[in-house]
Image 1 (cartoon, rainbow, N blue to C red):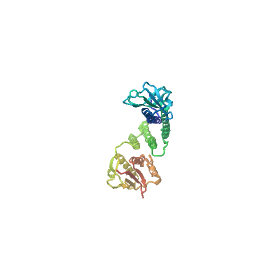
Image 2: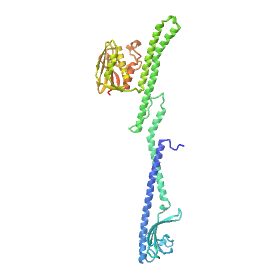
Image 3: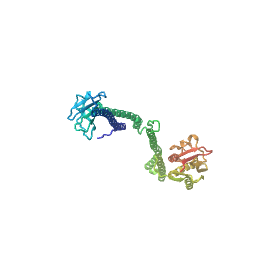
Length: 447
């Protein structure tokens, strides 16, 4: 059986109410004890004063006639002989039985006590003092008693304090309910918005309250998570779209060649058909490999990173290439970045492939530092890229007018892969102004 409330608001309200009852209950008990002690002390003081006055008068014989009532009826005084007969009393205690049957012994002549009689709600209690006038066996006893207020006897004080505790606890619970409700209002709005977000529409965002408290941070984190999720889903959709778009042509060509060879084997050059099929297969393999690499980079794979000397990496990559063009290097040693070596090798390789494809006679590779960041620049002396196309060339399967022929280039994924690798390493890859040709600048954080 579940006893714990499901709602945080209800749980906090319950906890606040319980704490309020405990704290206010302890306070009420302390107040009850303090009130009772104070009232009893005041009543006992009055009875002591009157009892000692009358006892002294009886002992020295100066008490004549009925006992004078100086308390206005608040204190009853009786002089009682052995056997329980009242011989003298104040007007209010004359016709009443002895206040108590307590008879102080000769070695303890003064005794203070409290006596109650009757049943609720007619119960009455007295704070009294009994004084034995002398040590003689037949000594009389003087009783002085003051009635306790009714609220100390019939439970009215405890009832008022208990009601106050419950009322204040209810007020505390109500305030907690409202405050927690207002505090959790943005959380409920965030929950409701998240419940409405589906995989088909990830553009919506949760409401973000102002400030820097935990709820505002939660909203910001939720929106950042939704941003990442939207980008990941967009990459998946882009992957599916790219794959279906780009794989259709080589697959169709391969199928047409194979079907033609199957239907008319005597009219086809088998070696030529196989060579064409292998070329289409190589192209399919290259496209699939590039698309899978883009997918892994986009989802933030867990490849191990290491410190990498960018100049050494560039020198090794340039040294292993065999090109008819002149490749000039300007490498500053000690430019260390942190990254995945194979991905940075692929990035530089794609930039060099692109530069060699469109360069006239020379490609320049430069590594250095700029504004506390590592800088790698690949420049060619070709026709360059128009400013309007400098962002479009980084889109997948994009070929400019000068490179539309498949024979002039690859699948159109090289620069897209290079930019994704740069972003995954916290850097940027842009095309910058240059007097001639294209200048690709990669900036990465230094190690």
